[in-house]
Length: 248
Image (cartoon, rainbow, N blue to C red):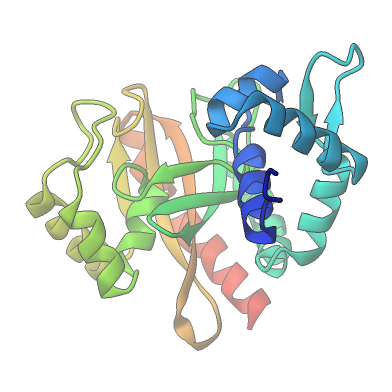
């Protein structure tokens, strides 16, 4: 007789299925889900049916593909611990966006990555790989570097001890250079990363402090990779200070 799956086993499998979705793969077939999650097709089919019954997944109109259900978004929105931060930041991000006219982003430290809570953009804005609820390695983006500079020592040491992925020739891939950069961020209060992820784009970021002056987020812009990028620093600091006051 086949033993029933443990509760922990079922939950782990459900999480693996949900993690298969991203902005570029918002709809997947059951076969795709099975392959991405590394689960048997029969198990995947059964779990998709159960998750769909609870509204956590939903079928496409033709029934051939599956997407994240509205119920999952609803539950996540209720419980998000960063909801207050995003609500405090959004008015200042909107003001900053009116000045800069390109991408404005709010990111938080999540493990060894930067997780982006919000992004404001424009139709003619420079190319940007960032997405809301998307992640990037800490060493590669301006927001990630700011967060890493103020992260606990064990997080910094872990990132420094692992291979640093190269996106372009300008990406920081040397632990020595990364240590120097983190120290400079703490000294001057901002970072400018010209061409670190996309050669045509530059990131500029500053820390956002919460109560007790702890860094809780990074506010960044992604603008064309030119000399004007660094001129956004005063506006970024003003917006970050406004967010800090709104949260205090």
